[in-house]
Structure formats: C-alpha cells, structure tokens
Image (tube, rainbow, N blue to C red; front, top):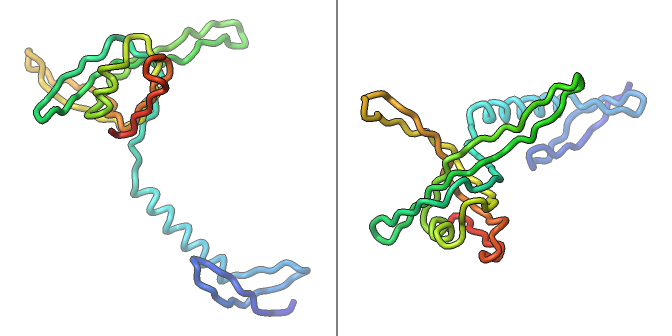
Length: 169
C-alpha cells in the first residue's frame, strides 16, 4: 500500500485528500465521509419538503360551469373522469374498469378558454394542486370537498381549439 494525493472536486471546491491505492483502486476516506454528510443533509431536506402536484388526463363529464366575478375574473368548474382499465387475473377473474371523478377549478384565462372551447366528452390534460375545503351542510353536518386547482391545461380532443394550451393564464 502506498499513499498519494488525490484531488477531488466536491460541491465546486477543489480539495486534496490523502488516498489509499490498493491494487489500482483508490479509496478516498475523507471524500466519502464528506459525501455521506452531504447526502444526509439532502435526506433531511427531502424529509422536510413536500410536493402537492396532480396530473390528470381524462374526459369532461358535463358542460363546464363558468362564473364571472368582480373585475372580469372568471372561474370555471369542471368534472373530469379518469378511468383505470379493467383486466383479467391469471385465475380468470375479471377486474372491472374503475372510474374516478375529479372536481377541477380553473381561474382567469384558463376559465375563459374552458368557457369557449370545452364541452362534455372532451379530453383534457390538467396539472394542478389538490385542495380540500370544509363546509357545513343545511343539517349542520361537516362536509369535505376535494378539488384540483389547475395551473396548466391542454385540450386534446376539441377540434375548434386548435390544440389550445393555457399555462396559468
């Protein structure tokens, strides 16, 4: 075994570490120790941060409901159906299709595009965030409504929209 210097660039800083050469294999203990600390710090950051991102591709279940608020701000509500296709298990059991219905809320320019171009049966791509609202119904029972607040929308099937893309308009 012989010791020699080994130059490593880690986090953009050149450093010189003593390295151990054994049968042409360099083992750089300090480099790996620093790498381990770096990865532990990244893991802590990953455990702290969170992501709220939803991507849906589905069919519009009914014509959109569009309201116009103050200052010409529009808000559109659509119901989007996504379907997981059924399949057959190896033992012959049929697993049926499973359809989920999603309440999607679009604001501003996207709501205007929805009002003009989107109809029942159209295929849409939606990107957004999931939000859950609580309210009390007429009987005083607490209810929950989960919605997708869209950040981006693509129309797939409407011919008159010309492949319209509306990213956060």
